[in-house]
Image 1 (cartoon, rainbow, N blue to C red):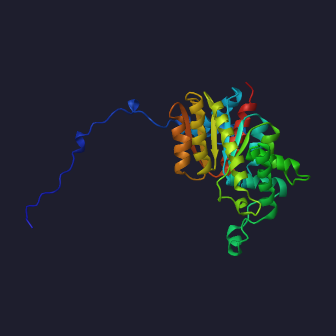
Image 2: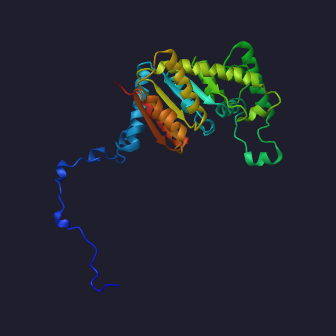
Image 3: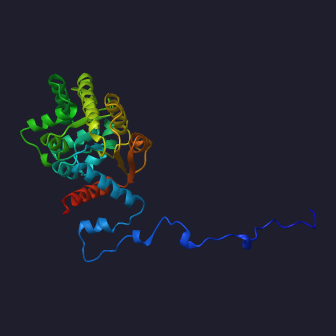
Length: 324
């Protein structure tokens, strides 16, 4: 090794050019910071105290979009995954329907099953691992027979799957908790309620009473109903995807393209938001990104359903009730 080895080069920091902080753009300003609890401990004060940055800012924009859609009578489509129902969010959605906010309620098959069991029996969500050992998982007689017979009746009468479930619940002489059923609430308030099945993915498909023809007929009718409701999103509507990672984002994208196909490229200029515990590919591209490329805005709000969706519902209700 050479004895005259030179040291590596170093930049002379005295050559660095600085700029006055007064002309530097800032992403965060003190005026946007959160506010600590004060004398006013109301929910409105809490929402207003959130920092006006990042996801808190996005949350506020989603709330405002829903409120404006309700005031301007634009479509607000709420799409659900099953976990949302079984974490007790039903009363929040029922309230939004009573207020005339939600104009279409769409869900995957598991959400409908959980809602049916809560309304009829007062409980839902079995221990999958335990039932899988002896083949008893998903084999509840009353749930499987009740829902499958509802679909068969729906096929015979030209009802959609959601409507079929609602009618079946209405026909029950006694229900444990009808007040918690989002399907019943939608039906009773003349709001389209649609269920989008995935054959083989739901426990009722393994029941002896299952009819593939009835499942397909009623669910496909609901697909057409969702496509029709998408037309109401034009210029100010909102799509809320609440906890569905695959089924509803896929169904929505196809329903939206049908709506645009028959309505000369409409709807455009609406807001989409995905509320989920973790980020998934399909909600991001099929709900948040692609649908609003022709105009509008999409948001991702990450957090547990049992916290974030009540926050959304309360914030919308508070803003709707606020004096003008």
